[in-house]
Length: 427
Image (cartoon, rainbow, N blue to C red; front, side, top):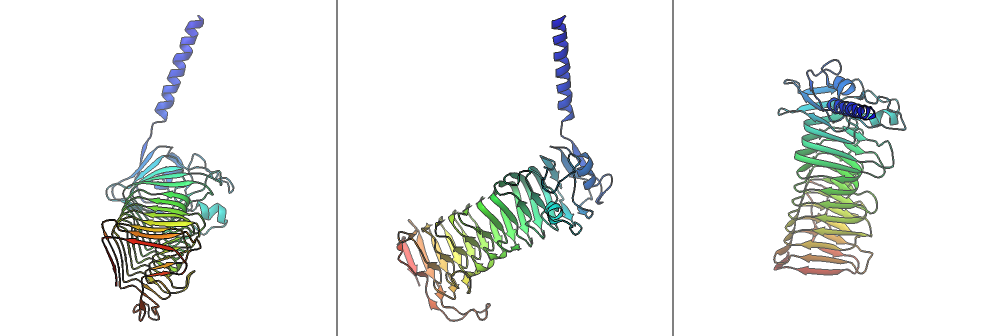
C-alpha cells in the first residue's frame, strides 16, 4: 500500500510539473492598434498580459505607437518603489516586423525626479530582445536601475534598431555603480539625434556595425563609460559635447577598445578630444581607422588627459583635416592628438594630412610626465606620411583658417621617438 501511495504521489508530482511547464510556455502577443491604452494596445499587453520570455509583434498598419499617459507598469510587479527598482519583463522580445515600428514615450512632466524621470524610459529590464524598432523618449528609452544600486547588468539583443531623439537622459543608461551593458547586435544598431548622450554605463560592450550620428551631451555625445569595447565598423558622425564628441572616458582609468574600421567624421568637443577623450587607462584601435574633420579646443581628434594611459593604433590609419582651435587642457595644441599619456604607438601604414592647430603640434602634441615614455611609428613594410599639417593657425574665421607654420609633431618634454617604415614622408 505504501508503495502504491508513493507511485501515486510521484505521478501527481510529474503531472503538476508538466502542467507548470505547459503554463510557462512563451506566448506571442499582437498589438492590433496604435492607441495609448485599451485592449489590443502595446500598453495593455505590457501591463496585463506579457510574461517573462514572451514575444510582442505588431499587426499590419500599426507603424507608430505613442505612449502619453505615463511610464509602462508591468503586471508582474507594479509597485516600483522609489528606493528599490524592480525588474521588468525579463527575456521579452519586441519585434516591429519587416516594415518596422516606432515607439514614442511622451511622459507627463515629472513630480519626483527619482520616481518619475528615472523610470521615464520604455523598458527597464535585465535582458530584452528588440527587432526592427525605432525608440524615442522624453527620457531614456531604456533605463536599467538595478534593485541593488551598486551593481547589475543589462543585455540588449538588437536587430535593426534605432534610438532616436531621446532627451533628458542618455538614450540607454545603466544606472548602477558597477555593472555591464551588453549589446548583442545583428543587422544595424543606430543612435541618432539624442540630446543627453547616446549611452552611459560603467562597462559597455557592443557588437559590429554600430552607428552614432548627431548625438550631443555634456560629457560625451556618443558613449560615456569607464570601460568600452566596440566591434568592427563602428561609425561616429557629427556628435558633439564638452569632452569627447564621440566617446568619453570622463574619469581616471578609463579603457576603450575599438575594432577594425572605426570611423570618426566631423565630431566636435568644446574642450578636448573632438572624437575621443580619455582621462587614463588604455585605448586601442584596430586596423583601418579613419579620423576626418574632427574639431576640439585641444586634441582635434583625440585627447588623453591622464598620466597613466597608453594609446595604440592598428595598420592603415588616416588622420585628415582635424583641427585644434584653442581652449581646452592644452590650449589648441595637437591638431590630431594631444596627450600627456604614456606610450603612443602606430603600426602599419599611417597618414596625417592637413591637420591644423592654433597652438603647437599640427598633427601630434606630446607632453609627457614619464621620461621613459615612447612614441613609436612603426609602419613595418608600409609607409608613414605627414603632409600639410600646421601649427599656429588662426581660426578667427573657423570656416577659413589662415596662417600657420608647417609642423607635424611637437614634443614638449623628453620622449623617445621611434619612426620606422619603408618610406617616411614629412612635408
